[in-house]
Length: 286
Image 1 (tube, helix red, strand yellow):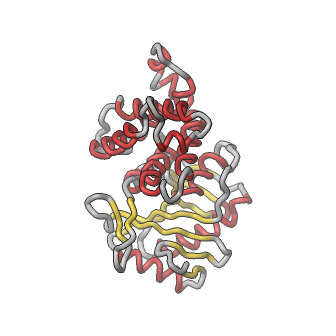
Image 2 (cartoon, rainbow, N blue to C red):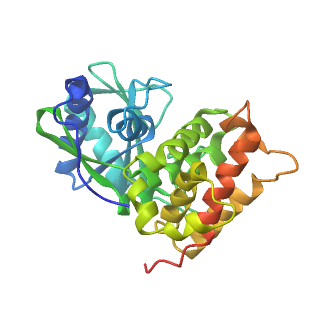
Image 3 (cartoon, rainbow, N blue to C red):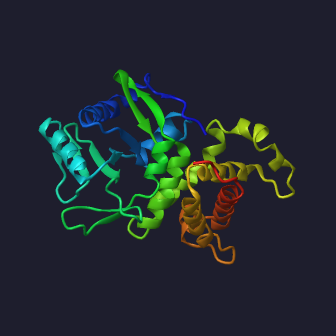
């Protein structure tokens, strides 16, 4: 894994994204909050703009994860954005705002607003609950990004994004089927090409000597290894339990069916490779 700068400063097609991000960054900086790009735009930065993978599901919104000490800090940021005159509220959606260019911005707080079970309950009634497990872990491995116009921000790393996709899939796949599963599949398919192929011959050359070695499964297995280094022991157990529940080879479960409708058995093999990498990695020092 690496926190190498992702330099897209000469990509004019990202100028509007940069403009929206700069406005959020400016308001957040005044309050000592550092935004983190997550969601679909993070996916596109890693897979499309960095690797050239075609965009399969276009998006006109940008998701920001925000480490805040309490709900008052989050409310202060929303107020600051509104008073600047560049954003308006989205009716009925607590975490959404609309930039004056028309772009939607989702703001997801974590950190001091989390419950012991790593969830947030949106005020004032706390009726809407969201699982934010993975955001603190993703923040620790975030990558710096340079965008047009001198805009600087941070984006979740590719392993961090995979972690968030797994958590989001578990949290909302009945409401939004296939969305997170498809993104997870794309990360697995292209992980080896995201600067990771040399690692096979450096860190993991012993894998190539195993009787069941398949090159196609190297990327998912390496992803599992890298996920392990984002997580503490309970976190690794939580993700392992999720993966185990979805790799029943007798009858492919929901996640592999959503990942690869035409060949869910192959998706099971990818998930098993992720699980293998996750469980066969030495416990990281945290």
